[in-house]
Image 1 (tube, rainbow, N blue to C red):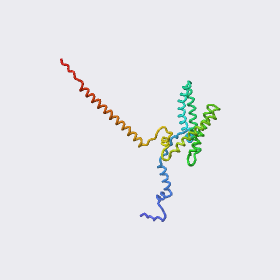
Image 2 (image 1 turned 180 degrees about the vertical axis):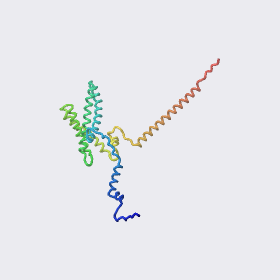
Image 3 (image 1 turned 180 degrees about the horizontal axis):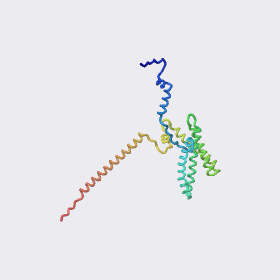
Image 4 (image 1 turned 135 degrees about the horizontal axis):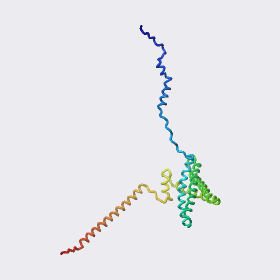
Length: 247
């Protein structure tokens, strides 16, 4: 008996086609994408500091400046102790500690003041002057408090004037030069306050050429002297008689 196949009604779909319906395809693609993603890499242990980064940006350079000033204080205290016929080690330690506190407190106070005075246009020379004078006053107060209550006011006034005067000198040097055309180091070297002279590449090349020319002249003079000595030696050998001894 033959097999009779009925025609499929319109709108009907195969079971395989239904299983791969568009509604289920996005979910399957999402699962494949998630499976293809690399496994998360564990983060490395981030550096942990006792202080926040903003405070570390002030403390770290201040301690470096304090270390430099403290080292200078050690040598100065030792020299003062030798001059006064006192224990150099004691004077060195005391002076080094005081200079360390003065240098670190001054630099830290100045950094904080500069951040406070910074405006939309940046830091102006007047703001630097205010910051330096304020930092000098704070450092003088701290240094005076270490030496005794009577030294607080004189130390604050002296170091405030000292910091402001130093900043005035720096501002005057920077005003005499063009900061857009040259760096701060070049401007300082070209100023009259610099103990050294700034040379361009051409000037340095000329100096080297002059030195080489002098060396060539000296070598030529030495060669002439050697020739004269050899000639004189040859003449002396010709003039000396040879004594022949016959037995």
